[in-house]
Image (cartoon, rainbow, N blue to C red):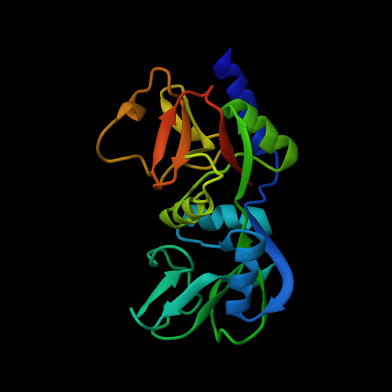
Length: 237
C-alpha cells in the first residue's frame, strides 16, 4: 500500500510546475540582486550541472533572461557561485571568459556582463516550514501550499539549504524530498538523484534501510535516513 501511494504521489508531482527558481522582474545591478534574493528568498540561482539547468528552465521558462549567482572571484581568480562552490559545469555562449565580473542567463547560454549593468534576475526559492510534521504530512503540506518537498541537486544547493536551517528555532534535521522506494533512493518530485550528501563514515544504514526510509538534511550539511514518523521541520519549494 505504501509503495502504491508513493507512486501515485510521484505521478501527481510530475504534473505540477516547480517553483524552485523564480524570476524577479525588477532590474538591479548584480550585487543588489544578490541582496534582494537573500532577503526575500534564498540566494541568486545556481546552475552547476546539466540537471540543474534543466530544472531551472522548467521553473522559469525559455523566454527569460537575467542574473544568476555566478561571479568572478578576483582573489582566487576563478568563477564561483554565490553562497556555494566553484564552477565545474559551464554553458558560456562564447566560451569561458578569462577575467570579467558576472554572468547573465539566457535560453541560448550564459553571457558575460559587467556587474554594474542592470537586469532582471533569478532567485533560488527554498522555504523552511517551521511546523513539526511526519515526512508524509510534510509532503502533503508542501503540495497543498507550495509545490513539493525540495530536491537538492548539487553541493551548492546543499550548502545554501544548510545555511537556511542554522537558526536555533529550526529542528536539528529537516525533511527533504528523499524517499527509499523499491530498493532505491529517489526524489519524490521526479528529479534525478545524481548528487548525494550521505555521510562517508559512521552509520551507513541508508545503503539498505529496513525502517528509516525517509531523508533529512542536518545542520552539518549531510543527509540522514530516519523514521518517516518522526516530526521535523521541512523544506518546500
